[in-house]
Every structure is written in structure tokens, then in C-alpha cells.
Image (cartoon, rainbow, N blue to C red; front, side, top):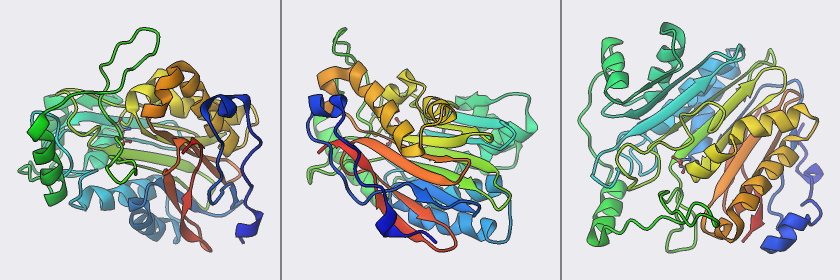
Length: 343
Ligand code: ASP
């Protein structure tokens, strides 16, 4: 049984944290869910997605099926963040990225995919039916159609339409600078801060461990809202937005994709767990690496990592307050606020 009182409290102030402000503890994590099936996913849409994943896991189903079924729920929801109704690129087109990875290190990915409702399922077909890992753009769409996925009409959700109309008023493309040294600023806003101070987000990443202790993960997104046409973030990139090593653990990422790619984020977290770090400590170490690279610009971006190790322990860490994840086991179903470095 998970006992919330046993959650680990915020770690001691690290030198990194001191240089960027105060370390804060929210509801904590590191769930000891040993030997039991568990599914975790990023942000609050994860609660609904986990329910669908649990339908697979509770009957002893495979983690791979769970993570596909789970995020399909989010792809189906007409919202501003994931799926065909999500925030478009700056030219008004919704372009979708997704990937999936199983316990045998099989993986598949699609990116810059238009007019297809379930990119995660196309990613799975790439994994299972082609000799490749990644298909993009019109080639990915052609493959999807050949596999029987219907070509849909793009229809923005009311939220995404409103967001895009607002954005068009200024059409301002002012992404935060990528690197404090080079002063090159080409990255889009992913996620960006909303007027109420919360961080917008555009992704669901999910990891499941099934009753056999096998791990799989999935990640699906519309990418950064109002991005440059053709831009890809971390989400469809194996090792960046998602990585699974069935001997060690798995990780998924959300936030400013460019900065997750820069440190091969999810792979880095898994490698840190391989060295013996807990999921939470591994996520924190990867976050600190990004913050070291970004310097002062770290305050302008959000990145969050969510990981599970082979023992079934779960942990997360983010640059800023506001990242949360959903967890479901046979005894727990709730949202957990990630720890973070900065308010
Ligand atoms: N990581 C995603 C991207 O950069 C966005 C997000 O997680 O909100 O495309």
C-alpha cells in the first residue's frame, strides 16, 4: 500500500538550487509500488488516460497496449494540447508528433504528421510493421493511410481556435533565447506561461509497468503552440521525449523540447537510474544539467521529467512549480505535484 505520509520530503538545498532561487516541496513522490502494475502520465489529462491504461493492466495485459490505449484517450479529447484539435503552428496547421517504446527496446515514431487522429497508433505500426523507427510528414501520413487510418479534416477545438486567434492579433514570434552564450533565440514557447501564471503544456507522456514487471512508454503531442512550420520537439524523439530500458526503468519528458533534446533528456534520466539514482534524483540531476546550460534563461522555460525504475518506484522533477503527473496503481489514483527548482 502506498502511504502518502511516507513520501519523501524535498531534498536538501543543492548548490544548483541555491544559485537559482529556492527549492520548494509540493506533495512529494517516489511511490514504492514494488511488484505491482503502475501507470504514470504527465499533467492532469493523465488521470483520464491512466484509467484507460488501467483497463489493460488490471487484467494482466501488456504495458505496451496500456500506454497506447491510455494516450489515445487524450488524442481523442478535443483540447488545445494534444491531438487534431490542438494549438496549430503559426501558419494554422496542426502537426502531430508521437512515439512508443516497448520492453524489448522496439520503438516507433511519427512526426510532423497532419490530419491523422491517433499518431501514437501510427507510431506503433511504424515499430511493428516497418524496418524503421521514425517516419515524418507526408511519408508518415501516406503510411498511416495505407494502414487504414482515415484522413480527417483539421478542426481546431474551441480553445485552440481562441488561442490561435489571440496569437494572430500580434503574430509575435518571440521565443526565449536558446543559449545564454550564443544569444541565439530560435526556439518556440513550449510550454509558455499563461496570464494566470500557470504553464501551458502540449503533451502527454505515459509509462506503464505491467504485472510481469515489463515497461513500455508513449508520448504524443501537438508540439509547441504557434511553432515554426516543420518544427519538431523532443516528444517523437526516442531518448529525448521518451526512453525505456526494461532492465533499468523508463522516463518521459515534457516542456521546452529543444532543451530536452539538448541533453537527450529521457535517456539521460534512465542512465542515471542505471547508476543507482532514484527516479526522483535522476530527474532532478537531468533538470540541473539543463539549467546549467541555460544559465539565467532557465527562468523562461519549463521542463519536467517523470520516471519509474524497475522496482516500480516513481519520481519526477521540474524546473518550475506547476508540473504535475497522474499515477494509478491498484490502490492509488491521483495527481501528484512534482518537486521543482524555481517558483
Ligand atoms: N515537449 C513538447 C514539445 O516541445 C511540448 C510540451 O511538452 O508541452 O514539443
